[in-house]
Length: 87
Image 1 (tube, helix red, strand yellow):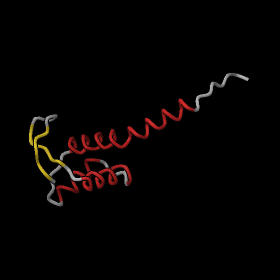
Image 2 (image 1 turned 180 degrees about the vertical axis):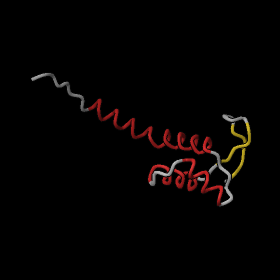
Image 3 (image 1 turned 60 degrees about the vertical axis):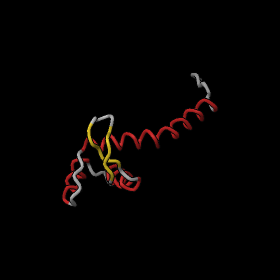
Image 4 (image 1 turned 90 degrees about the horizontal axis):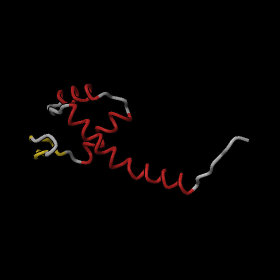
């Protein structure tokens, strides 16, 4: 984990590696672990990380990974649009 300035927060903030974000995403969405439990588990390992930072990284990852999927779904819907009326 690296530390730099986060213009969003205006203070020193963590810059995570891809594997760290992947671990947080898998724990959160794959295993259903809430951020409060992730925070506690990471603190037990000597890694202080607040829930707000985790939430921001989950949002950024979701926007990055989700945008191409939503775009493809939209393009598919437009290309295959049909109007179904009452029979």
